[in-house]
Image (cartoon, rainbow, N blue to C red; front, side):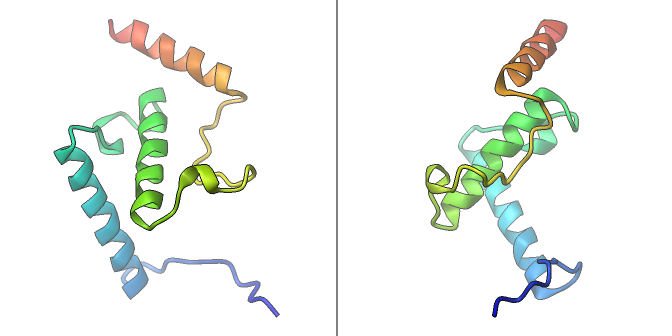
Length: 99
């Protein structure tokens, strides 16, 4: 019988420290590669959402997964837009505002 208990990362636990180490390592690697990290953008901006998704994919790759092999219903990061088209419109609008 499978354990139905939800997965929790308790602050200060060994698993929490491992997750922090992985996140900090990935941020350093991405910076060295010239990539942006989520902290480089305002939270909830279209760019922040895009970089969070890229960051999540890089973490999955570092863990030996291929993000393309994940089931269709799996979403590590929900963008919060109704569709890809709505997301792209919001991203373009944000870019126009900054130009």
